[in-house]
Structures are given as structure tokens and as C-alpha cells.
Amino acid sequence: MKKKPCIICVAITGSVPRKSDNPNIPISISEQVESTQEAFEAGATIVHCHVRNEDESVSSDPARFEQLKIGIKKYCPGMVIQFSTGGRSGKGKERGGMLSICPDMASLTVGSNNFPTRVYQNSPKLIDWLASEMIKYGVQPEIEAFDLSHIFQAASMYSEGKLVGKPYIQFVMGVKNAMPVDREVFEFYVKTVNRILPNANWCGAGIGRHQRTVNEWCIELGGHTRTGMEDNIRMDRNNLASSNASLVNLTKDICEKYGRPVATWKKTRELLGIPIHLLS
Image 1 (cartoon, rainbow, N blue to C red):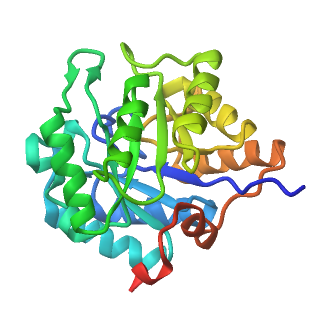
Image 2: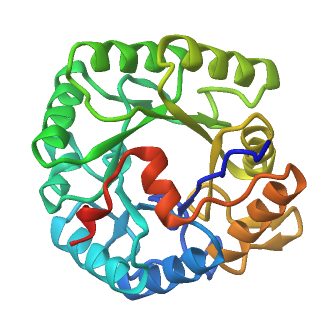
Image 3: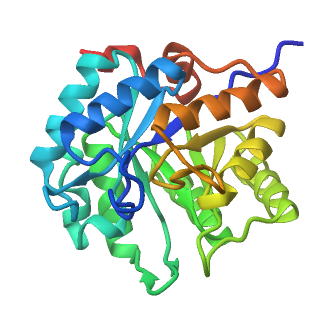
């Protein structure tokens, strides 16, 4: 039986890595577009987007998101564009100010949890507002689960109509003080999603040195996966990543190991329920 195609998401920039950490991190809009095109040509079909200011500091400026979207649509036709509404790049409703630009998807964390040095705050009021904005502008959410409770909260929001579309759940593993990288925990999360959100697609993101491990678990167990320099700036302990495309290629190698074809952009949209007509 032919195995299910694997969607590869590439998180190109994030809010944390700087050029001083790895000079190949794409920061400017033009750098991000170029890096995304390379990753798209390598096989990534979802791009997870943050934007930065000229000094590399984080930003939630809708104008920058719009410039990035225009560039990606031009050079990566068909790629699913996903904006971040994460807490590092803005406060309160600033985090959703770019949803009116109508990306295909946007990340959504439906609960709070600890980060290495602070609390990642996601109040019920803010979550409900972000979810309502996604419905308003036809943006499909990707649920970023940093904790088991986030999976149950997402299921509740879908049942109440606060979230719509085909669920896409991402397990974020390896953030200090949050979800550990543990195989039994990972398998339990997969079983939980399959039980309470049986029509959902799921994927995983491993942070730092755990990226390859989580990639492999996802691909082995039939899910989708995320790579990219937001989460990991290295090819291995001794070598920095030369590009986002180089990390995509590592992920493709794992797909080949397990006999998983890499999803095309058309297949990705089909699996996620994102119509091709949104490309216009």
C-alpha cells in the first residue's frame, strides 16, 4: 500500500535566532523570500512566517507581513503561507493584526505554558479573539500544542464552533520547561489526537538538537513535520545550517528512509482542506 505523503513545513526565521548565532538566518523580507523559495524548491510546502525589524528585533507589523506574503506568492506559487500569531512578536491583539491580510493559515496556541525564562501567556479572551479573526478572514488555524491541555482545549473549541476547518495539530517538543522530547509522551499525544480529533492531521516540531529526532518520529508514525532555522540553526553539533533548504533536504532523507513521499503543494492543500482557489 502506498504510504501517505508527508507535508514538510519550514519555519524560516522565527523571533529568536540572530545573525550572530548563524549568519545564514534570513532577516530582511528579501532574504526571507529567497530562503523560502530555496526551501520550496527543495520540497517544503508550508512556510511558517515571522517578520523582523531592520535591527533584527521582533515585529508584528502587518505591512511587513504583507510584503512577505506578496514575495512568497510570486516566487513560490501554491505554497501554503502560514503567519505566526505567537507571543514573542507582539502583545495582545497586535499578535493578530496581520490576519486581515488573509494568509492561508496562522498558528494558534490555545493555552498558556512556561518558556525558559517566562510564562507564554495565552488568555482565553485573546485566544477566542484570534480564533474569531481567523474565521472572519478565512484563515485556517494550526494549533501549536505545548501541553496536553492544549489538545483538549482545541477539541473543545472545534466542537463549540470557535474553530472551523480541518484540524491541524502541531506538537512542539523540546522547549525548556514545556513539553519534553520523550517517545512515550509523543505516542500518547498522537493517540489522544486520533481519539478526540479523529479527522485531524498532526505534525511535530523539535527544538534545537531535537529537530531531527521529532522529524523522524513524525515521519515514522505517519504524521507531518516541521523543520527550519526558527527552531534549529545547526546541521549537527559541529556545523551551522547553510540554509533552510539544507534542513528541508535532511527531512526529505528521512522521508525516503521510511518510504514516505514528500507532499506536493497541491497534495498539501488537499490534505489540509485549503482550496487552490485561494491562490487568486
